[in-house]
Image (cartoon, rainbow, N blue to C red):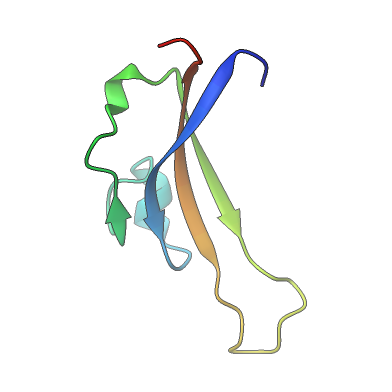
Length: 72
């Protein structure tokens, strides 16, 4: 996005329904201490997994990213 910046605000090392439903707060393995969640215009949830991994070898990741104006 032009004129925007993204900051990783939280991380979960599996697909967790509570993580998604709470905008990346509940059941997170890591939460940024210096992220001001109220300052973001958007919270983007990103799920990343390898679709071609062997059964049991897939290690999905979920991230919450805060998006705001680049000059804030």
